[in-house]
Amino acid sequence: PLGSFITDFEDFVANAFEKYENLAICGDVNMHLDRVSTHTHEWSTTLSSFGLQQLVTSATHKKGHILDPVISTHKVVDSNSIEVAHVMSKSFPSCDHYPILFK
Image (cartoon, rainbow, N blue to C red; front, side, top):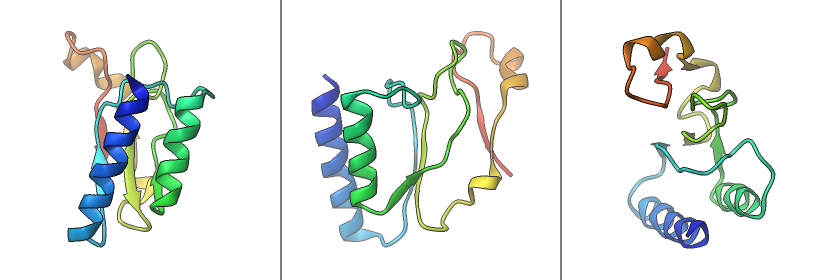
């Protein structure tokens, strides 16, 4: 369930901050981050509580939602350096997610 994923993610980030000052986290969260819901609100609250920012602003899934965030502490990843490569999807026909590139 998404509620337990968010709790597990919060524990993961708390443990990571015990070892590292700066973080960049990327991955598929299987949650439509571009929709307003209780879970996306909890997600945003969790990120904010750790000073993290979700930097992807365009769809990362072929059905048109943001499922693959790039999360970072302040200034670790420049939001202008991220590109969701919609045109490259032809190179990965079996994948329903777009590649995310860092310029």
